[in-house]
Length: 211
Image (cartoon, rainbow, N blue to C red; front, side):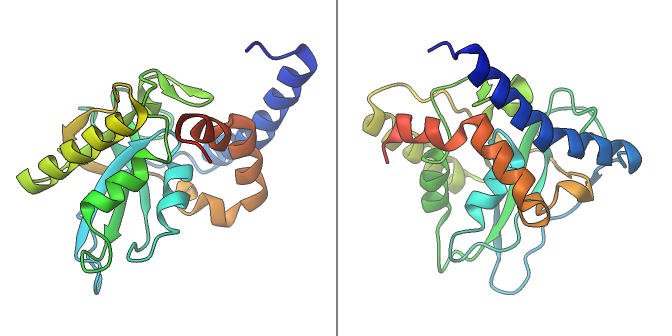
């Protein structure tokens, strides 16, 4: 549905407010290069998974609500560019890396949850964020994860009655995003809420999956 001009302007203004401050901060910080780093498996969080679901702030916030999930890290993956940054991560997707306790929550359960918090029918981006870097993906690191991801995708397709376009990809390398992106929803709660609301993420998820 085409939005009326006042509504479109209001939404655009909210997005500018939410993201403009981030861009300014990135410029003033020099947008330091992200680093390739090994996954942390502190304490009970002995496993990790990497997912792409559009804006990594939102995926990070969604996953950290779950029991058995540790400190989720935002980053980039899926491309060939070395040392990607927020200003230049061509070919990469915005992703998160989530440490988790397999005794509390399984890889399959996390993928099921993830698919129900994105729009897996959209291959052009997510919500108001368009383009390759905002597309969805499930990354696997071994045969067991691949099989679990395939099963989760099949279950989602059955539930929706439509093909799920989210690809299942082998993880090559994870690059950590700049510090100002980490825990953004905690550090900047108002800007984050404005962005998430204006982008229509929760509205679209409810349309796809129901309340």
